[in-house]
Amino acid sequence: MNSCIFTNTAGHSVSQPHKHAACQLGSLALLQAPNKCVQQRRKQLKVHSLFTGIVQGKGCVQQVKKQNNFSTIQIQFPAGKTDAIQTGASMAINGTCLTVTNQNNDTLSFDIIMETLRATNLGQLQNGSEVNFERSAKVGDEIGGHHVSGHVHTTAQLQKIEVTENNKRITFQVPKQWMKYILPKGFIAVDGCSLTVGEVGEDWFTIYLIPETLRVTVLGNKQEGNTVNLEIEAQTQAIVDTVEKVVQQYMQQKSLA
Image 1 (cartoon, rainbow, N blue to C red):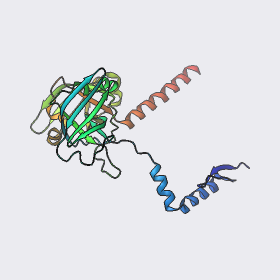
Image 2: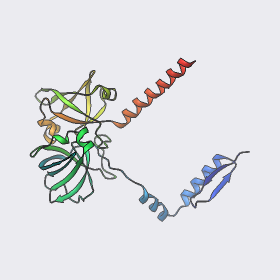
Image 3: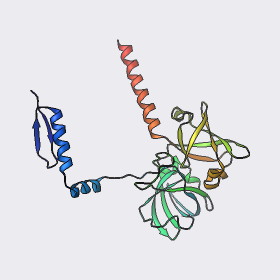
Image 4: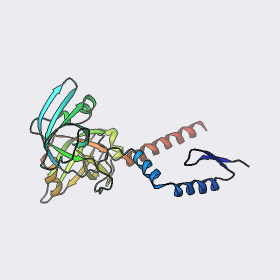
């Protein structure tokens, strides 16, 4: 009879004739572990930066220092929005995760490297530009939007604005290779704002904005021809890529049969 080998919480190898017995013994060891040990293990967990797509307001660019493939920006935030923030903290600026490099009251500095300048609209910022911002979420915070990493996938161009009495319908043109991840009623982050996709075409999609979103975010000031940052919803991308891979492998096996 084969034995299954596992390691208990003390680091010793234990052998049992059945997996079921091993699982029971492992569970018992965990239940008996001292609270101090559990707390130490929790402290070792690494929590990566996470955003929710619920924009917390607008900041105003005070200064842009451009160098060769590098830029430093200073942004002034509304009073109280930078409380307790520290150098090294993460903040989403137009949906792009940036690191705080300096703080002067309500004004924060951020460095932007070549790849970020290429992939996002942050290279277009000027003195006086407004940006969306969101501080990284803490454990226990309400997730009012969806999981946003702050890693922008591509940019889109604002193609058309249709204004009604109480909302706006905006059409964005997107590089075609990203459209397979943009589905009707799915999530998408536009300049860091968690939104629901409306209609979808071959290389475009629409969103509908309520007055509150227009008030709180820079989307209320966007004009046709402007560029926005897009982050594809992670689960949608994983599902689409996995299905494509499985289908491709299946078709290859069928062709060889």
